[in-house]
Length: 216
Ligand code: ADP
Ligand code: MG
Image 1 (tube, helix red, strand yellow):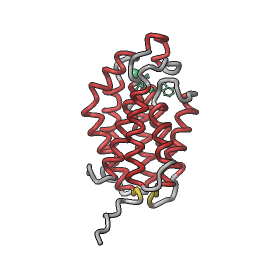
Image 2 (cartoon, rainbow, N blue to C red):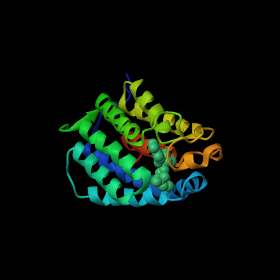
Image 3 (cartoon, helix red, strand yellow):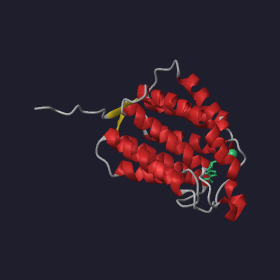
Image 4 (cartoon, rainbow, N blue to C red):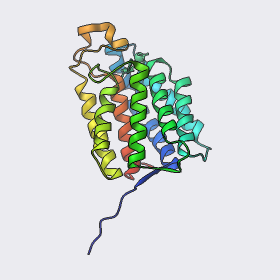
């Protein structure tokens, strides 16, 4: 009988550090594209800002051998201080809320991870006073969270969450922006993908790749 190899079932502090490294790679690769999205409906800084912040986070995490919540807290503080703009605060809030939700745990199984991401998404909504359908990063996070909640195994759950975030990113195109800088454009925001939703889709793709063994 051939038994299919069992994939990873928990996320460790090392995995979180690998996630941040992969985020850094993907954001660097896509920095120009993210900034172009922000040029259309914002101030053309999203790619460059996030690239700088992720690079600083990779550096800040390189030598540490901490618990998951400490990794998430360092990531949060680095993004808040180095990204700037709305997304620095919002991603910082996301990872701080994740850190609070995982305090004291050695590793995170799918349920713990899902609850922590749920806490992070609620943190973004609270801090940004935003909800679904306002053409923000939340429109990638919410479908990803729904996919995690509907799944039972970690790696397939992360694959589905990444695909859902990507679909959420695409779905921001026809939306009218009612929060953040893009809302200043009113109807002219329609027809453009939201840069924050695009970077969120990259973050979730990075996590799926790392836990699926497709990135180190
Ligand atoms: P800034 O708009 O300050 O230049 P960035 O360009 O780094 O910041 O990030 C813009 C992204 O932040 C948007 O594409 C959107 O996804 C997200 N964003 C902005 N304001 C909000 C908000 N109030 N709630 C949720 N997300 C927001
Ligand atoms: Mg901007």
